[in-house]
Length: 140
Image (tube, rainbow, N blue to C red):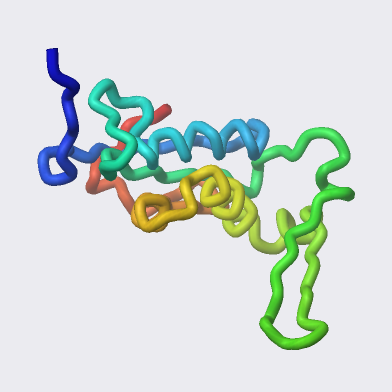
């Protein structure tokens, strides 16, 4: 019996909508990352891009449990000496909740060309409206 290997050309990609309202940010990110990677499919092949499109709505209503709003920071560096910038997650969730959700999901994808390609199929919105009704997304 031979092992089935999926081909990227034959994969039929669907669209999924994940509602993050009232759910923990990390658990929502895990669902999205698994779908983007294609791990929910029976024909999943690790070295082939078999993931699907994901729309995350209500990112502003996602919940951070425990003391993460106070204790967790998003760090980025400008590249210059002394250019480290740190933003508390309380501020990040208030100003750019889409960025917080994208960071969580992208951190769960592989840090390779395969993960970068999967990240392009992610669409995050702060509110409950999105512009992808024409694709007939499936609710999760």
